[in-house]
Image 1 (spheres, rainbow, N blue to C red):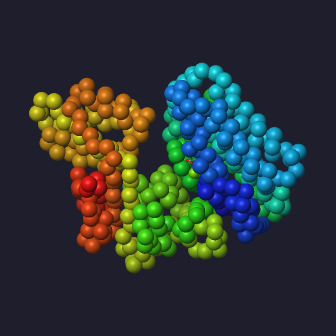
Image 2 (cartoon, helix red, strand yellow; image 1 turned 90 degrees about the horizontal axis):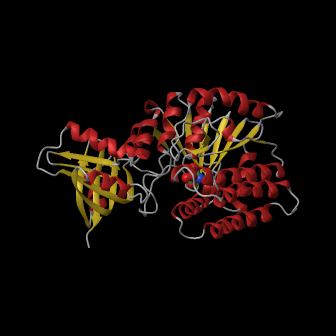
Length: 429
Ligand code: ASP
Ligand code: MG
């Protein structure tokens, strides 16, 4: 059994969806679980609806019309028969959002976000599943909420592994077995459900993690993430002209790179696969026969592959410096207090630096969380912050690569370990 994950870019329009069907034909006769994200940039669009709804700004209803039209256009291109049942299925999913928008928000931003945004995946999977059927690939659409059980940490739900292990055998496995030669199941990435049946999400780009959860619990032979790049590159082509594909990567390096902000794989994806030594592949949906990148145990990686420098740029960062108001040291009690505030406000630390009279932390500039955290910290500490900084990480660095990335930048923080160099910088003006 294999788990194949298709992200937003791989289903961004009618042509892309057809390409998914073509690609799946290469796997005919095998048991395949297909995990799909929302189409194109629909998660962002649904996020905007949520923002408008909660913060009472913009016009959520109008935005929703735009999203409907986007899907309707794709549907019309894929299914010439207007009576095809997929039209009604997609409409029904939109009704769920309309009902929410008609009422006042009840449980706050994160909760409403998950109820609204998860609809993107419900719709994309309906469309993909119907198109596969149309293309002669018999398959079952499975609601991930039947088996992927989580707690109620909305927008970053924690998986209940034990319950999910039971439910996945009860609800997903039989659907694979139902088909004669090689079963195909289509299900949603990113989405889970609480014990009270509220939708949850696993964090942005969480569909990779969904694929890993399913792969791990069903002991898949491999998990394949399909991308619009040939594999894991040593830098994001957005920032670098010359990039190199890594043919192989250890689980360890993959975790480090994604933890530091490489967006190619969701950071939580690696652990469940590493624990069971399940291969993770990253391949291009433009060249499905290409080798891509294979992620596996360190001992199986050739020496020369382990040395290629990788670069990760995280933009839109804020560097927060926390200082005592009375010139006393920053000591353990302060630190535990500070960390608690970060965790209460659910602000993730990307880098930290500790000195006698200050503690500096680099975080994503999340407008819904960071200002509130700063206000909270200001009650007990003096707080300085630099906005619009960048966090640069170089794994397997040498001096030449470092000189190249920090040229023309003002350095606020510099940290080096044996394999990794990190800098918080801003462009010199
Ligand atoms: N659709 C979700 C997102 O864009 C999940 C994913 O793509 O993995 O974050
Ligand atoms: Mg996506």
